[in-house]
Image (cartoon, rainbow, N blue to C red; front, side, top):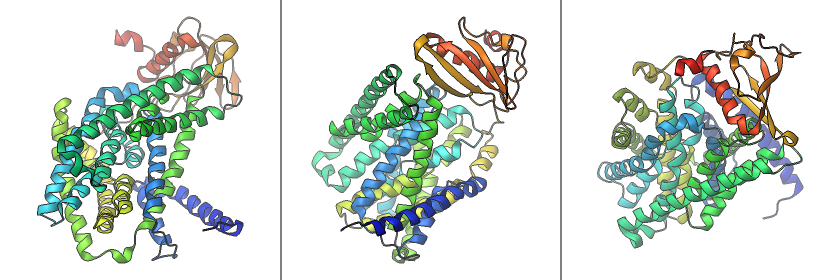
Length: 497
């Protein structure tokens, strides 16, 4: 099929209009406490065959584009995750992504077969595609809910890591390879792909960070592009080794996002923008793939019951089993159980059996679509209320500094740009009280649009922008000291002692 300039013009017009509406819808969804994916899905349905009339039934193309979008979303999740804050809860996150997924798949498969009457193949596929939480939904909702960092870190780590094993499992089932490998062989394949994928991600991540620190690119705009390209290189390298590309891209992004790279803030902002674009395109496409005419009362009823099994049985039990590696109070585990947000990932996973021509794959797609819409509407808006009822919500705490870095290559130093947030305890601190490492200094303060060369008695205020020059070898210590004072005030080090 040819694609001429006239078709391109129409595509650009419709695509730009839909994207602009989707961007504006973010504000509406954030006010309602809903993941924006629901609005995007409904936009896709409205544009589809039952609405505007745009037909889209290419499951192979949906599968490929869905995976491409998930790569960008996972890369953004890794690049914007603070390893120092997420590390204490990484054990639980990894356990949820492996042991938790296995437990959830088992319970859903048994329930799907014996309670819903699905054939074993479809029942296991239902469990596999519904078990992973969605990175886009988790990252967008939980980062605006005031929670202890250990809960946010666990849920974000789970959503970033649980795509890998489920993609492998769904692919093996859809292609019939499970019958060839057997149960133990399937577990071995999944374990190999995860370990090899993580190894590839670590290699590309650390190697890429080493390269970015030493290469002098001619334009600052190339650094974000290079970092995002490295995460995609991790995916491609892992898949070439028959390992998990999803594990590789998340791990590589996590390493790069927490490395000392030039223009880190710009890189994260670029990744967030690309991820939003990927989310919009992904969810609208999945909405187009749905045929509302196929939905029957039987399908909707099956989806409601399956969602109840998932939300009230499979998820709580899988969280309880996973917590063996990192025990938490029952209130926090209850919240983790309720906050297992589903989104695009389960729907994208259903495109695998669709593209492989598995019997009943269309019904599976419809069931999962209904589950995602109904139970995201149920869980998303209620998360703040549930957090307060379970008493796991916390008051707003000083957030990390908004910190940007630019390289000063000729003197082996970095210029840090810091914005003092409205809740930072840097407010009221004198420049001399920062006690930065020897050799680092605050060179300029920007306040209300005016520049000020600071003295040791200059008092910092909310909204100030600071320019701090630090030798590269002292950058980590300088950033650490600034973050300590931002979180604990001028007596941070003495209080810690």
